Amino acid sequence: MPKGYWVGHMEIDGPAQYENYKTANAAPFAEYGARFLARGGPFECVEGETRARTVIIEFPSYQAALDCYNSDAYQKAKALRDPVARGDLVIVEGYEG
Image (cartoon, rainbow, N blue to C red; front, side, top):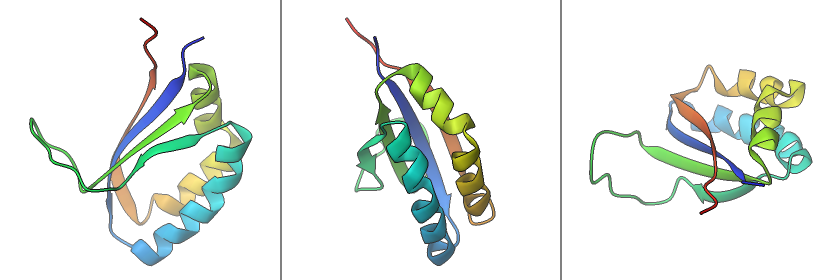
């Protein structure tokens, strides 16, 4: 079964308040088996445009990635993020070649 991934590109306008989001998302991420592969480290955009922070989160399956996003616990965490960050988030199924 292919894994699932969240790929996010974010701008954080309120870093102190963003910490509340990070605290709140820990429980749903643990429940759905999330594992951070990239979390805002240095990068070089070699094509197109992006935002200041890139995050890649791996889940055991595509369905787990969707279920986590749609869970009540994550949506409560997201409500803390929305006023202090903006960005793009894609949930994608991994490739098993």
